[in-house]
Image (cartoon, rainbow, N blue to C red; front, side, top):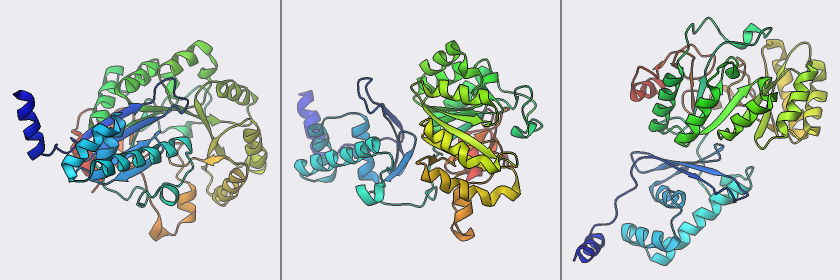
Length: 385
């Protein structure tokens, strides 16, 4: 009798929309594509699908439901029945639509540089223009401490005199995940100076977050330390390269031999400006997939475009929207007219200082609240004012 009543109820009461929240999929270990999907369903039923923490797709309610079933790894026949009841479409058409979305998602996984609009018929929105319930990434400055001899300009040590404890940082990560933030980057200062870095990366992994690390890489050449860090599930590294130091090149080659995505950040300086092309060529010859380029010298700003063109000619992907040592220069700012400039700070990402204060982005002065003490809703509202 129960099954009969349930069948009647399902017939006359279509299944409810997907509940708002974060949904996560990791491919099986034997899948050579090694990919992750994060689907955030918004309160209005629309969705944001993030493929490998890189490609962001904005989905309407129907597409978000299909993506939810895909992330849940549901069989197409089951999905067809579910969608047919909800939208009064033929099951065969629903099954076809579901398979089509899945194929397009996997095409992005297999070909990261594929344009979702041109090749896959996904609708376009200007970068960071959409109002969502949370950003896509949280940049966590665990400490503003620096290694001995490091340039003090690499961290504003006067801004945060205290550091959150391990438990407090875990609370911050819990709060971020509950808000729907799928990606955390651990930065500083030099984050490897924190004895609990591995523990914090492991906690992010246990939640289901994609995690990255911005570091000078010096401690990563300690093989036991690096192996422990990688075993936690760290997903990507950005290494701060000082090209005049031969040891940095040696460290870089050792780290690149590991099974993790590595990119390099290069700061153009008066000392290396004449040799940047050779530096980029050397990185390309090492098999480096991506670089981040900035400068703290205003007179070198025009040189960034030339450096960017050189990197592109060497098939080096340019990374510009992740935290780097206190520079505001990136290719988008340089190329777009003032009226067309798009900003991800405060929308696509937020930045947490060592004491828990939240800024729209690294190097900005506005404090939106404290992620340890203040409600998430209040911080996000402040970010979107």
